[in-house]
Length: 151
Image 1: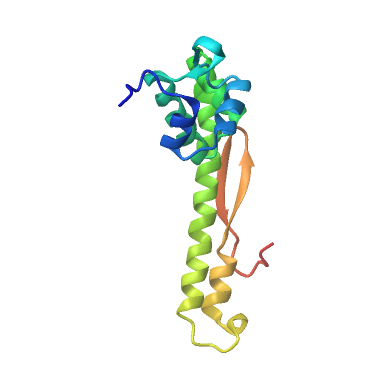
Image 2 (image 1 turned 45 degrees about the vertical axis):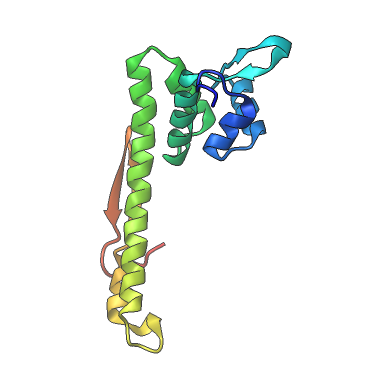
């Protein structure tokens, strides 16, 4: 078995369930820089594998490749924290929206009305769906006041 310090692009792609062109693209945009063996073949070591794992985790958190490159390339802690803060604010907003959607779905699942739109509980759940308001450098999630049409 080969050591993890000497893996080909195909082996790395296979370990992470990626197509090889994804790793090539990440290299082209400056996220990866594997060593080159004779003939120019890419050789990936342990550090490269860890970097691929970080990139994948960041993508799952909603970061774009440019943001990931910025975080990995900077030695400026304040700049990195700003990138992370923006993503955190976006995640908080998305989580609140998902929670509100789940509340409406659960309300609808428990409703016995033939016409869901006639259910007072469902109408209240829809009115309470949060909306996001950008304020300065942060995002505030608020509810729609009762009696106010949502939209």
